[in-house]
Image (cartoon, rainbow, N blue to C red; front, side, top):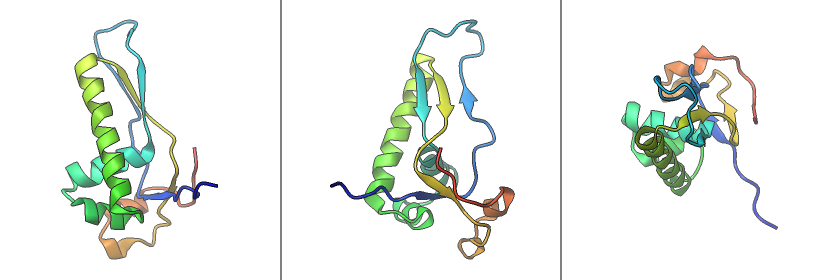
Length: 119
């Protein structure tokens, strides 16, 4: 029996979750689905300039999990940009911070409604 997946800790949901080419009336490319936890790894590593180790600590998972999630997310972003596909951010195994995460210095934790989610 496989080990159960550990939910990744996420500070907030993305404000925008659907992206695509502006000029295409009916995009013909496939829809790319990026999970919430993949989005969070991109946000923490690329935007917040965290190392993979810092990101793993923030998300409460192993560094190898972050590395895999980050690589998957980068491939999806590249396919979205190069091939002109639609990118949708949804789903994944995650839980939102409960708002008491200020010890990490994350100002985003207080910008959402608390609770656990699995979409």
